[in-house]
Image (tube, rainbow over all chains, first blue to last red):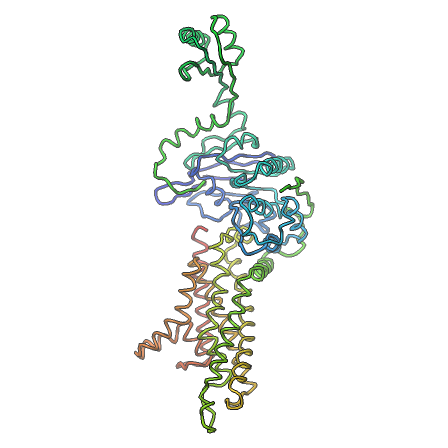
Length: 310
Length: 274
C-alpha cells in the first residue's frame, strides 16, 4: 500500500506535483498515466525520499521510505534504467544491494535468473543495452521480495518479447497480493496491463478509478461509416441525431458516430437505403479517454517546457 | 533474451522475514566495501599511488645530495621523509581521486539513486562510506610509506642517511593517518558538491594548492593561516613542513576539517534533492 497525502513538489513557481492525495492498493496493477512532464517520475522520487516534498507526505505501508528498517524488503523500485555504475558487473551491483539490506546472497542468482540476465551477470553493466539495463533495474526491485513495487516507464527499450514478459510479471506480482505501481505515457500499454488507473496532468490528479470505468465513462465506442452518396449520408446523419447518436463528418465521404454499435448504424442506413462502403466499429480506447482527460491540462502547458521529466 | 517468468516466492524475505545477514549500518558498510572493490578505478587509483610515490622516492633518492656530498656527512632527506614527500607532492592526488569517485562518481554514473534506495538514511550512507575509505586509505598510506621508504633507501644506497626502524614506523603511520583524514574530507566535500571535477578541485585546493601558494607569497600571517588548512596540517603531520604546532595538533586540525566537510556533505544530502 502506498499512501500520498497532499503531496506537493514546487520548483519556484511551477508545481511538478500539486496536492496529490491517493492510495495505491495491493493486489492490482495500478497504472500511473500522464503526458511527459506531468510529474510521474517526480511523484515516484518523492515516494522513495530521493526528493523532498514541498509539503504533504508519501508513505509506504504507513511509513516514510527513509524510516523503513529494510527498505528493499518493503519497496522495490525501478526508476532509472541507468542507476548503476557502468564499470560494475550486474552481479556485483546486486550483491552490494543485497548486503545493504540483509538479503541473503542467493537472492542475487534468483533474480538474475528471473529477469533473464544470468548469462551476462559477470559483464560490466555499462555494456548493457537499454532493455538489459531495465531488466537489471527490475532485478534490483525484486531483490528484497517486497510487497510494494514501483516501475517508472519500465517498457522503454524492451523488445516485444520483453514487453510481453513484463506485462505477465506485473500480473503475477499483483496476483500475489503485492502493490504494483507502473508509470507510463503509453496509454495503449496501460490498457493491456493496468487494472486501476491514476491519471495526472501538470502534477494534479485527474482520475483515480478502475481502468474499465475510465474507458467507459470517457470514451464511448464509435462507429465509422463511409458512403459514396453525400446526400444520403447527410440524411443518415440527421436520422442518427434523431435517434440520439452524436454523428459528425469524418472526411469528405464519412461519418463518425459516437455511442452506437455498428449494428445500430447499419440498421438505420439500411432503413434509409444508404449505400455503404465501410461500416467499422472502433472500440473505446484508453488513448481517447486519456486525450480527453488530459486535454485541458495540456492546453495550459507552456510550449517551451523542456524539463523532460515524465 | 528469454526471461523465465516466475514469481519471486522466497518466503524468507519481505518485511517480517528474518535477516540472513544484517542490514542497518553494518550492511551499509558491507555494501560500500563491495562497491569499492568491484570497480576497476579503485585498483587503478591504488596502483597510481604506489607508482607515484615509488617514482618520487627513486628519483629523489638517486639525485639525493648525499651522493654528491664527497664522502662527508650525509645530507638531504632521510628515506622515510622522502616517502612522506612523495605522498604529499604526488601520491595523495591519486588517493583523493579514489575518495572522490566513491561519492561524486555515484552522482556522475547515476548509481546514487540505487545507493539511496538501499540506504535512505543519509547519515548512515555517508558514515558507511567513511567507515570504508578511512581504513582503506590508512592501510594504503602505511603500505606506500613502507614501499617509498624502501625504494628511497635503495636508491640512495650506502650514501643515504641512516634509516632507523622507529622513524620508518612513525612516518608510515603518519602517512596512513594523513591519507585517511584527507579521504574523509574528500567524501564530505563530494557529498556537498557532487561533481567529480568540482570535488577533486576543491579537495586539492584545500589539501595542497592553497597552503603551498600561501607559503610562496611570503607573507608570514598568510603562510601561518595556510598551516591551518588540511594541506598545512598534513605537511606538519608528515614532518615535511614545520608549523608552530606539533603533530598531535596537526591530527586535531585534520579531524576538525574532516568533521566540517562531513557536516557540510550531510546538510546538502539531507536538504537537497537527489
